[in-house]
Image (cartoon, rainbow, N blue to C red; front, side, top):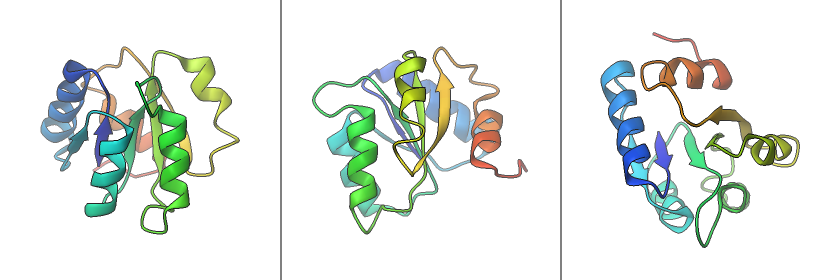
Amino acid sequence: MLVVDDDDMIREVAKIALESVAGWQVSTARNGEEARRVACQQRLDLVLLDVMMPSLDGPSTAALLRLDPTTRELPVIFLTAKTPLATDQLGRLPNLLGVINKPFDPMSLADEINRIAGWNSE
């Protein structure tokens, strides 16, 4: 899994929560450009992607991931405080599964991802 957010604290809290609570392997990226590089280099199950980031925002990053054959099928969940903006993208980006609101509960973040992605929690 890849957590992408320009806020260092949110990135770290999400990473620690997903690794310690769910036991998942989590990589992080500070922005859309870094997310594209990491996604092309690593085999990922999902991208948890902030919507509002400088330079390359979440919707643009998700669209670029969709265009690259290496990351075309990579599912994305938006993590955002801008829920209406993110929800508006649900029908427009085929790889966008859903939206998780900020602030999020670190202890239930993995459950929320499992629910949106349709994964069985283990």
